[in-house]
Length: 265
Image (cartoon, rainbow, N blue to C red):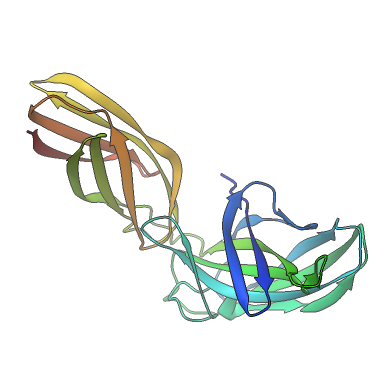
């Protein structure tokens, strides 16, 4: 599955306003990058050259700077960024990028080479990940009080062939009543060594009969070793005793499930 995310920064003098990633094209203020996401397999001890294409569609000359970062995804689905080498599954500690800075005239394209050299280490296994960011030099808007800068990402996943394990399970569930309805929370843990995407549903039953069914948002990302807290809203239930059964497909050989009993008063 391809997920394309971009990040746009707007800085006003000493203050910066962060706009979170958007599920759209990998375009930000006239800058776009391809591939926005790439999954590759590289054996230990080998190198791989990744051509990354950066295009300027802003209508004016811009200067672009490249940077490499580690990343993770929090329980709520928000991205977290760290310096290279911070995370145990850091891919960019083995990476070089050239050129790191370049001028890009209007409606032109620059090809950047990202080289991944995987160490010859028998202990490496599973998936490693990182992001290459491409950011434009800030440009002042009308009035000279706000500077605009675009930052777009190319996300790279690399696996060691023959070492991938896909595994995961629901580790916790609860349900909370409110005037608006019933809220269900499901905590999924990715115990494998690659990222996964979650799909599923929650079935609510009373005395063996269906009382409600809620679909979980499609393709929720959970990184290697990570957790994802799923929260969904169900309808308001009459007083009584119920059972909530969660079923999640994470791409493994079998689905994972969980169930809780709860009372509505």
